[in-house]
Image 1: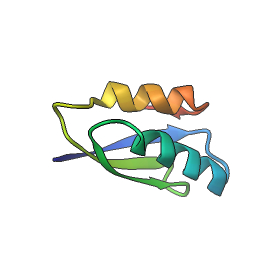
Image 2: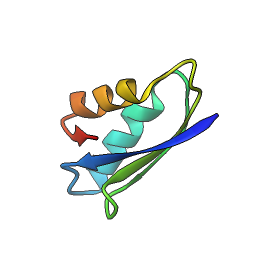
Image 3: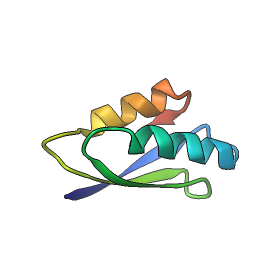
Length: 68
């Protein structure tokens, strides 16, 4: 397992945090996603062979937010 942190822009409430957490958690290979509204970030524990940072960014963008 590896851990990465992504910057997430566009979140304004707890519902946004829940949305980002849900889309990340649904990705195959993601073990855990901790999303922080205050820090505008998502800390993701994942299996490198199954999911990439690009996959994570894509689902965040698809959910209506910006990811770096």
